[in-house]
Amino acid sequence: MRYVCSIYKARPKTCDEYPWNVANQIFPDCQFYSTEKEGLLTMDEALETKTEKEISDFCVSCGKCCFFGPAACSKLLILPDEEGGEIEGT
Image 1 (cartoon, rainbow, N blue to C red):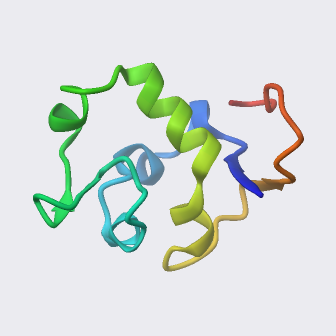
Image 2: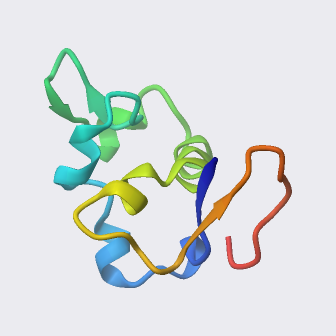
């Protein structure tokens, strides 16, 4: 399954400040979680190894914290793995 944000490019302020919240820390495969730091990387730290596009693409194609976080987001689209292509609004 893929958990894709349907409003990623037009997110409200709450989402814009995301992903630095407690939800990310429960996913060891999150690109912002650092085992060495035992916590979340800052955007500057993440940008040392990835471009903004790579970071954005990862979040758009993951969405686990939006689905399994404190409250599931109603703007999240759940797609079978085999479905590809652009999602309207992303």
